Image (cartoon, rainbow, N blue to C red; front, side, top):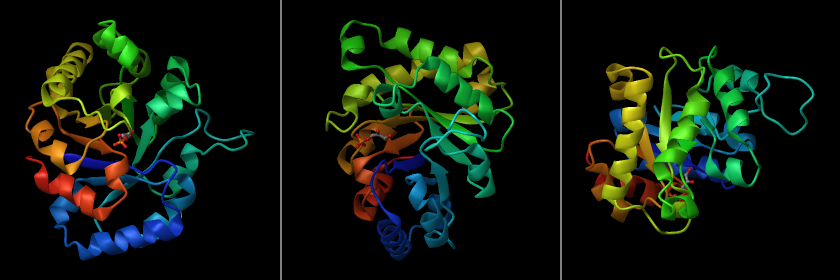
Length: 248
Ligand code: 13P
């Protein structure tokens, strides 16, 4: 299981320091630490790197520019992620898609940029409530996967996160069965596009209102390999509660 905290526009440098101080005090064993991933806002990344020293957790960025460098005011570059030795980056989060109008081509460009780097994407996909109610969930997931992964070779590692838009920040978590159905669809997509092995070795996370109470049932599903957690990742207590309740 992977436990990834997406801190969105929360957690300034001081809050990040406090978080990792408490995290250290929670005595989470080394193996479990390796399963933990955190995505602070970029202005808090240096603070997170310093505060997480001595821990075995993974850190990453919530987003990158599709261009490596140049005149792109306000963007964050892959080159800096590489310099900071960060191994992960969220790509295509639904908030990037809906609020910042990133389209399928933008997301594909970001995925392609990572092809030749040591940074791995956590590619987020998911349908809106309207799309689910219209019976289009699989169609939407297929289109998002097909376009983003078009030029991504089998040899490039990435993680997928299924985050139904209607479950993000709403308190409405998908049922384990509903999430499993989508995860199985995604797994089969990987099998068809790449291979049985790639499908088996690619983690598929669930995200959307994951809380300690809901993590147990979800974690028991065979195709759910971890969680991408928003609100409940902001406090060590609830983040650890999710870990403790999950079955690996
Ligand atoms: P919540 O857990 O707050 O619903 O957020 C999920 C999410 O968007 C993680 O990327």
